[in-house]
Image 1 (cartoon, one colour):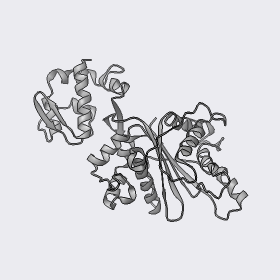
Image 2: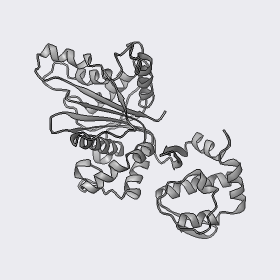
Image 3: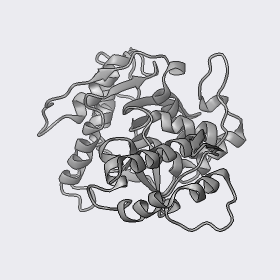
Image 4: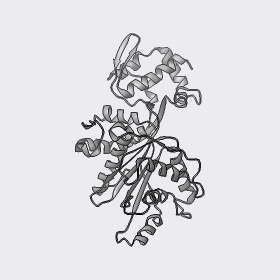
Length: 342
């Protein structure tokens, strides 16, 4: 593998995705934001219809020859080395493979959105590249930020822009996420409860406990899902808005990672990290807010959530036992959905 050609390969992916100006052989190519596939580097282009295709035609024969032999080589090829060096990642959307540049470090974004019936959607977004998600929103979908402060906020978006996000949910999810956990529930931490932390902890625990003998989601399957979410959050900065009072944002992150770390019912080797940023300063919170708002809107309209999301059974004992002790007339509920890249 020629280092110079490999670096050009990575540079094209980075510039193409972000829609940047790229210099090659004393020419400048003003690229539109583009999802680049491996095949783009080796396909024949007779009549270029964009600056990106003009660039592809201009690539020298040595680069093209090496692309054909080195692109897919296992372990030592361009794609595998780019992924290994954390320069790019590979995603599949509608059965098509694309190469996305890695622009930022992993983070967890947590946010919630209230429904008219008093319930909430709580989103735990396990992000492998928040910046790539922001670039996709800005430059591919042309979704504007709000002002004062400048941020992405679902409730401040005009309906056409909200609809763009709904229609491109799979793209945004796979570009920005390694995992997503969604809880739709009417259970909330409350200052009226003696130990409000248990409301939150039991919500997380209920995602993975029970159903020991279920043929669809047995204990082993649920523990596997728990462990994958733990790996995506342990030692990763957790960004959380102040939506869960009286619990602090630090407590929310600590309780999440601690609960996900459990093995045989006991916490093990967990190291939560807290990012002390406000929502307009935090890209992970803004992305989580968009997911939360989107899910809330879909539920309120009585529509089905995207097929990409899988249903996860909730152990209702985790919330009903509190209901019995407090003699609350309202029936508590929690509906779960999740997606995992790995």
